[in-house]
Image 1 (cartoon, rainbow, N blue to C red):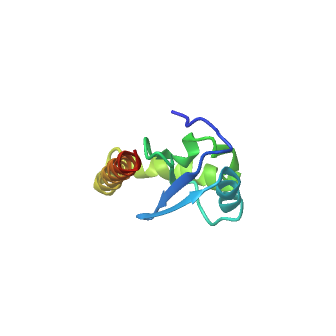
Image 2 (cartoon, one colour; image 1 turned 90 degrees about the horizontal axis):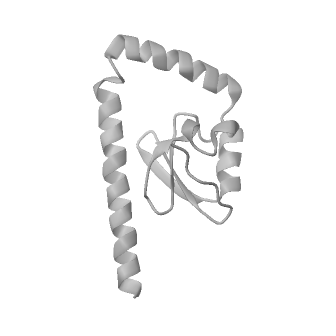
Image 3 (tube, rainbow, N blue to C red; image 1 turned 60 degrees about the horizontal axis):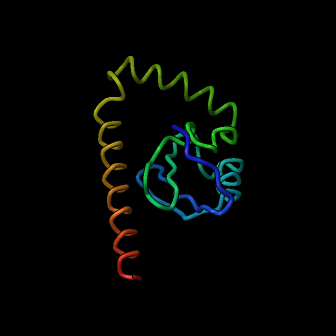
Length: 115
């Protein structure tokens, strides 16, 4: 699933349990290129509609090649050791879904309040 590019959209990043942003497309690219965000991050447009791995987003080409190669090998090893991502991966994905729902609720409440 790829999020659609838009120069006018702002993006949120989630990495290591921290959410940051909103950032412009150029700023997210810069964060990746400078190593301030990694290929392990999740990204969501400012609407909060869907959090996806940054490697499956429009920003995938900006994940450093060495990091992408390391991650594909380590993810395979992780699945071998702990099933399909293990309990920690499940907790993270659950947290991402809950945060997405919270952000969407807040955005809708703000929109309703402004009308």
